[in-house]
Length: 529
Image 1 (cartoon, helix red, strand yellow):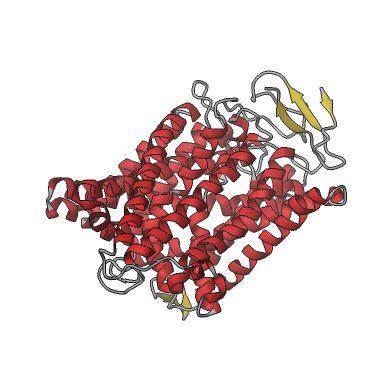
Image 2: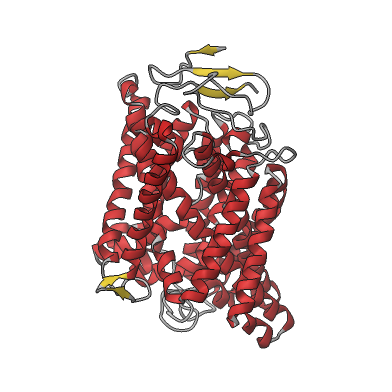
């Protein structure tokens, strides 16, 4: 039965179907299609856990606290708040779009319906390539902390040093990727069970660290300890605009990944509303964790450039390794290493979710080869797309590691460009998609228009500033190509690669690019609960 859904803009229709999500809505070309995924597999809590897990909060904190202090000093908590703002505004856009079009293609599907197939394809490409880069980075981090943890447990520097052996590092990394791929391949039931344990562990250890840091800071046991000041929450106290934007870029990266809970919307109970609520819940958990940890660490360690001070460049890439024993003691400090490993491993596994389901949706709508739309008959997961993402991640990381460590580092630096790219397009897509109903109420104007546009503008500004900074060879590893920073070359090159692949797919799938498969007016699939 096809009927007009009151949640949708004028001209859109919805197909309500009983049964599985594998039914095809609309009955023919043009319908928003069910993909065959396992419906009602995830609830509100499970969806929020997936969002938190993908962000990897403990890993983000240990790798970002130091660099952020290096840029903005005592205003680190304020910069975390500033980075939270555009993410929150974009989260409203995701929530409203998901209510109208609960499709696992998320940014790809929504931007196609708003702006057409070409912009939509590039938006989907931005998400896919950003996720592949993140997956490779997470696998490398999980590998490094695995050997570091083994070294701590055994008291052997030789075992910890195995991470420096390139062959051992890559083989261990590939094993982590294979394990994460296998868990994701088995569908949302297996994914959810693993994530409850890993996310619960890292948040519990983080809470213990914060409590002990506050206690020791109050006792004045460390010479660099500082009393809390409200000025730490004032972004206008940052010494320069360039320092603020540098810190803001780091902060935005710390929130990336919360939208993973939207990509499981076709597998979530209450697919139209639950994922949006889960996204906002995940954001609240993240900003609360970040602010408490930032304030606690800053009160205990200060921002000095020596010893455990957060401004020490020698410990900037792994702050918790320096603070674990001083704050928690040798017995409990090992838990912080476990938490970082759990954080990276959990995020590695859940980050397969958005890339596999985006590729699945792009394939289902004929924007990618049809083989990626195959669903595993038992696990009801995008098996082919998941395996393809795992293989691409393994090949990318191994190739970059053996080719050049500088190239690998610069590729990771280019990640922020991709994140801002597809988040901003999605935010603008929300305002444009709902443009006909913005005058219906003050709520519609704010959450469907003003908030998304403001979030998109902020992310576009960060994208532009990052692009300018990337031109300088000093950005990233310091390498260059014909005098141009290699981070700029890699970032822009990856976007251009997507454009070339889009031209190839336009020849193979002309119907999609002619707007005959997915348009604004196509029916929307909603599975009855």
